[in-house]
Length: 261
Image 1 (cartoon, rainbow, N blue to C red):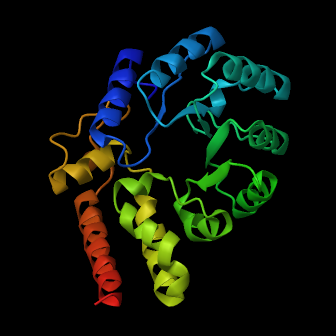
Image 2 (tube, rainbow, N blue to C red):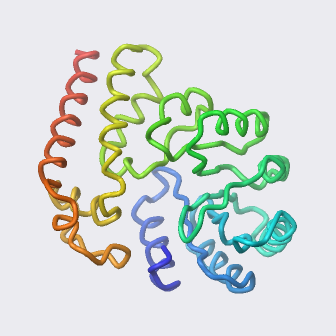
């Protein structure tokens, strides 16, 4: 999102809302500015496209050298400016730097009643579990984004998975969420495949995902402003790796289908 203009972010959000047509909820993000006044303008423009929730980015709440006081002031300014009836979420985006929310900030969001979702990037199961306890009884769901702890984090939170690999095999993660407890042996076997597949995340994402979808026929091209290099040149045997991910994905879809045969 940092590589898109506000006009492009608004157009993408509006396009998605229109095409989804209320079949499933849509959440939209897109504040990338430094100044809080500019962030408010960005978030209002996104909210006007009609998503079910607008996502705030935690590293926009304060600069790296600023502390909890600045974060709280940003929360206060943004909550006051955004529509009261617009559900909000948070994303601990790791770029340009990762700002993890403190326990006090998690509690503030939970108690405010305004927040419904945190895309958790702590990448630590104990942190996820602690945050789930802090937010218990509130509408604030803790949704892990790290594939390595995806299944136990799902078991702790019940909030699903929102990591990069949803671009590749989201149905397998959904099966873990809904049915993994019914088939523990297959769930553990599947987790090994999912975690190993996720080791491709540093291999030029998001261009990597576009390349995967081009192979599927859902994308026409792989151009990316965020990744301006040739991923095949930098990551040797990438095609063979993707072949195996496709093969494994098909295999586990067959195994899951066989359970209901």
